[in-house]
Every structure is written in structure tokens, then in C-alpha cells.
Image (cartoon, rainbow, N blue to C red):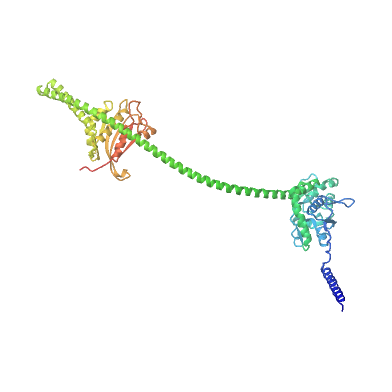
Length: 574
């Protein structure tokens, strides 16, 4: 076989193979293509002539608020449907396949097992419309024997209780039910409040002609949603989509506007308004809850910071108060120390001066006493001049004793601690104390406690007693009585269980108020006029007594005088 022919045969074979392959591919491809999907029919929306929700005019054109609401919801959802009419109601329309969705289907318990009804988007209030005689305020006695009602499960479900024995009269519309009551065909009718108020103008003439008045008694409020068959998933999904759009129409006010435009009474849009308000309230409450939680968290954080800052501030303030108090106490201690040094220097100067004067005065008294003794020796006993000489000698002796005590208590020396009997010390100081008090302030000495012994410096305790007597004298510028007494305070009257010796100085002066009593021991505090006191007397007295382990008490009231008690620990006398 020539080469050219073989080449041609190979090319032809290749072409045949390609053609066979293309044909096989085409057959397989077109064989596997699915048939064209069947175009499903448009959804059917069921309705019945039920003013004011649906209306048919003379040309059978549909109108009404439910019609407009469903059309708007379908437009928003991008859905299409056709309206179909079935005067026998939703159950017959859905079961018979006349309609896929019924837009206004009551949620009754006996319906839910067979039908899928969305959550209500509208509530209708049903009432019993009864006939009464005009002019009467009472219902006609007895239960109604017959009741007019529309075809449907909702009105029939209300034939219970007192209405269970009533004979039902099924009519075509709520208006027909009202006419049946006005004309006397039935005793009552079950209608919606909307139908009652919208139908009153149409039946008023008939009611007046029959001398009948209508009385409305509320029965039950029923929620209406979109109904479909339980086994129809497509219709149920479409109903759910429409219900979601109805929610949005409620929120933006479209649905209430349509209902009000058709003159639906306010009671019928209550469900919509309540649902809208409930949503808004829920959103508001959620927002408030978020804000409150945030605010509480923020306030809690701020409160914690404020609490920490407050505690830190209180700690700093407490430290500052302690520091300030310590500074004030230190300042007072320094002032008191300086005052005591000043007083000590002053007393030392006075002591030196008094000592010098006492020495000179003692020299003069020595001369007076010496010459008085010479006179007594030279004069015969019983002579008149002898008595005068004795008086001079006695006065000299008293002056010498005063001079001795003045020298004793004006000495500046280191305290000499010894066991002292308060009674003996006071008796020894009686002349000096009487001279210090003056004739206008006699002293009442009440001694008699020989066991009242203390340990201390006689000169120091003597100066304390002289200071208290001088203060008592100054508290009675018009004169009075000073009482000095000693006594023992039993152990049962003390907190530490020890016995104390008490030296008390009382006066019958003007007394002190509480404010003065609180301050009398402060350095530089005085109630005397300027130039008559340093304010250091009682401060020095308190310091001296505290240095001996004792204390000083004061008892006073305005107009009742004052009593100062020097309380010192008792010691046993050997």
C-alpha cells in the first residue's frame, strides 16, 4: 500500500474517532441534564366578605385594611400571590385546597393541631350584643334563648357557659347578626366590637322602629395570625416571611396608619400598639439595663477609687492630726517648762529677797524680844507696865515664828523626801496660813487624822497649801470662811485598791462654771484682773503633786464655793 494512501487512512480514522467521541460526549451530556423545573403556582391568599376587614364592591373588587396590609407585606418581602374567596371561612378554604394562606385566622386551641397559625398580629375583642327595652337599665331577664353569629370557629367557640344552651342562628355577616337582634329574630348576637360600632349606623333605624336598644357585654379577646396547613411547608414558610414583614410594618407605623385610615376603632389596634410599645419598651429596658450595668460598673470602680482615696485621706489626716497634736503638746510642754523656769526664777528671787528681809526683821525682833525680857525682869510682877511688856514679848515671839517659817519656805534647795504627817505639817503652818488668809477670811481647821502620812518634801507641800489658801482668799473678796481638813480615802473607794491621804481646802466664794474648771490647770490661765495673777499657781501646784505620785481634784459650782483636794499615796509611819 502506497504511503500516501496509508497516511490518508490514518487521517480518516482519526477524524472518525473524534466524531464518535463528540457524539458520545453530546449524548452523555444531554442525557444527564435534568428536566426543566416545574413552575410552581403562585400562592393563594384566602378571604371572605367580612367588613370592615375585607370588602367586595359591586364589581367584586377587593378592598379593606387587611387587603392593603397583606399587599404591602408581600411587596416588601418580594412575594407574589393571588386573592381567592371562600365564604365558608378559613378551615374549609385550607382543607379544601382553595387557599394556601389565610391572613386573619384566630389562634384557637382546637385549631393548632391541624393548622399552623403564626403569632397574632391583630387582636379582636368579641362581645355579646343583647337586646333590651329602651329606657331600661337592666338586661332582659334570663339567658338568651337564641344567639346570632357568623359562620366560623371563633364565634362558635364562645357558645359556652351561660350561652351553651342558646340556639345558634348562623348568618352571613356581623351586620346580619345585629339586624337579627334589632328585628327580634334572636335575643343576642356574638360580634366583634369593631363590627358593632361600625354597624350601629346601619341598624339604628330598625332598632328604633322595633323599640329595641342594644347592650354590649364583653366576652373574649382573640389573637389572629396567618394560618396555613400543617403539612404545607411552603405555605408555612411564606406565612412566616409575611409575619416578619408585619412586625416591621408595626414598628415603622405603616400598619397602624392603614388601620386608622380605614376607621378601625382604637380598641382593635390595641394589640399592634401594645406589641409595638412592648418592643420599644423591651429595647428601652435593654438599653437602660446596659446603661445601668455600665454606670454601676463605672460607679463601682469610681467608688472603689474614692473609697481608697478617702481611706488614704483619712490616714493622712489622722497622721496630720497626730503630728499637730504632738506639736501642740510639745509646744505646751515647752511653754510650761519655760513658765516653770520663770516662776522658779521669780520664786528664787522672792526667796532671796524674803530671806534677806527675814534676817533683818529677825535681828529687829531679837532686839525687841531682848528688851521686852529686860523690862519683865526689872518690873514687879502684876504691874501694869509688866502686862504691856508681856504683850510685846509675845508679839515678838509670834513674829520670830513667822520669820522662821518664811525662811523655811523661801529656801531654794533640792527637795528632801521624808515621811510627813499632814496634820502635824498643817498645825505647824497655822500661824503662817492665818496671816496669809487675813482677818476677813478665818480658817476652820478640821484635823484629826494622825495616820494620814505621805512621803514628800515639806517645803514643797507647804507651798502647795499656801497657794491653795491664797486662791481661796482671793475667791472671797468680800470675806468668807476657809476650811482646811485632812482625811483618809479608804481602799474600797479607789480604783487601784490603795489608801490615800487627802488634804482639802474649801472656800465659800463665788465658785466656778464648768468651762473655768476645765482650764484652771492650764499654764497662764487666770480669772484675776490683769496685773493680779500670773496664771501659773495651780499649774505649778498640779505639777508638784503629780511629781509626788498624787493628783489634785476640784469641785465647784457657781455660787457654791470651791473645794480643792490634794490626794497623795499614804505611807506607814515608823
